[in-house]
Image (cartoon, rainbow, N blue to C red; front, side):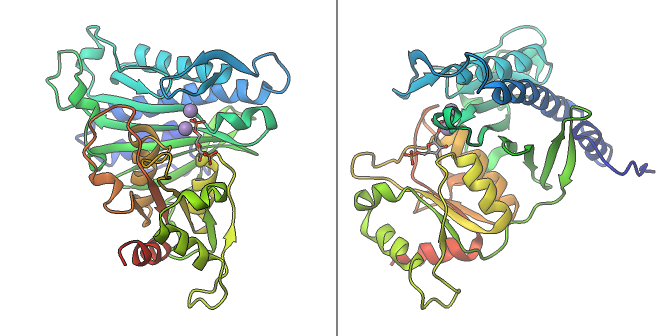
Length: 336
Ligand code: AHG
Ligand code: MN
Ligand code: MN
């Protein structure tokens, strides 16, 4: 019988889930615990960012050709460290690493899962005290257990994710994760240093009033996307427009808000960058999985994000995600 403790920590929750599923080995719970631990360490550094000399550029350029901030590197090392030393993960892919890292030791080779992550998303916002986040995606390996993980383990279609989540370092710190069974959100209680269940069974409202897009790129978007954005600003809408525009420039924060309040987030292709900016494997796939599990929709403008067959670890894709009715409305513009 379940004991009613009033509050449930992340560990208690994942263990409870496991008890409801007798075949579970506890490896996924272990993986989430490891991620929660790394998130707490990153949270401490993020909160100190204004005080200590951890701000600023690290000086190097990452594989995307972008500047690396110090906290990106710190976060990457924390997540890589806990996963490497845990017993649930056979290897990782990260925005901050040129290539996959296969752990290849006796215990890791027995591990069922591989993990892809963006250790710090929205990191250009660190210097200005705006919320940033971590995004992660978990696949069950397709390669033989007992041997090192392979590229195929990571380059799986998004529909095969077994779990995905994000951490938001905001006015409070939250960890939200999804499995096939649903989406749950945990808020870090600083008094006990634990993530506690605060948003059980999150559902994305079917309709919303918020649209999030970088308006600065407007004239670089395809005509149908421009027409949809125009429509978002018009009054005579059956769905109660005009909508409200909100764009933080930190996808974790933008999509988190829209997931809770209802809304649509877009990072379309532009004339300069036809595939947009966001990365399929550790930015779009995990959010697509979370939002779809919560009842929303995510596409690249043509097909579901979760149906895209990846070919490269760092590949990019146009990204449209949000409330079901708003996504259907967008689709009516794109598909004609
Ligand atoms: P990252 O900090 O990991 O490079 O990602 C930043 C991303 C995303 O969080 C955000 O939505 C987007 O970049 C903003 O891009 P623009 O400034 O081009 O709108
Ligand atoms: Mn990012
Ligand atoms: Mn990043």
